[in-house]
Amino acid sequence: MLGSAAWQALDGNCRALYVELARRYRGPNSNNGKIPYSVREAAKALNVGRSTAQRCLQGLVAHGFIRVSKRSGFSMKGRVSTEWLLTEFPDDTQATLMTASKDFMRWTPNNSFHSPMSDTNSPMSGP
Image 1 (cartoon, rainbow, N blue to C red):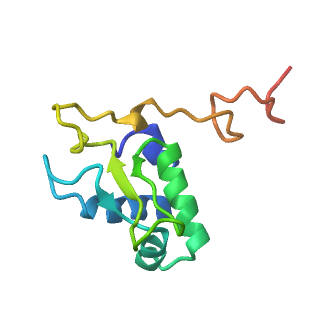
Image 2: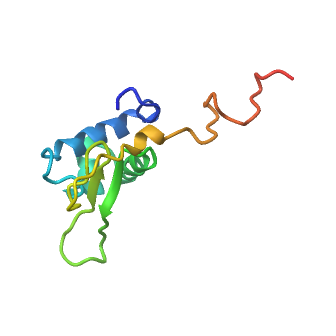
Image 3: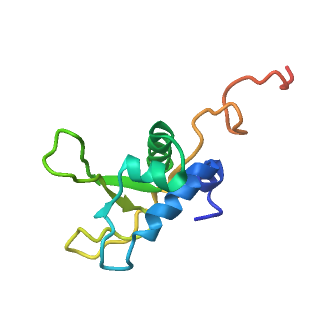
């Protein structure tokens, strides 16, 4: 996982947030897919603002490291956090045994200016 292109593309805050989320995972057949973690908790753990924490969660989703398994929000009754699934490990909410999806291994940069696979014409390219 650490050698994947997706991990290398993450910034330090996103990497730190993944570690914080992974700390809540209790091992096989336990709570993957039911890991509660809110933006406020992420902001406090990383010592950043809520908007930065939200961008980090979105970045982890976009790069394939985590998925939302149960969404939450202010419109829901009770104080319930969004529940997350780490794609590195199998989904514990499914009754059947499944393998981990490891979505991050299929991630590729999407025409990023800094990507060597980009279709954009860089000023350094020749005719």
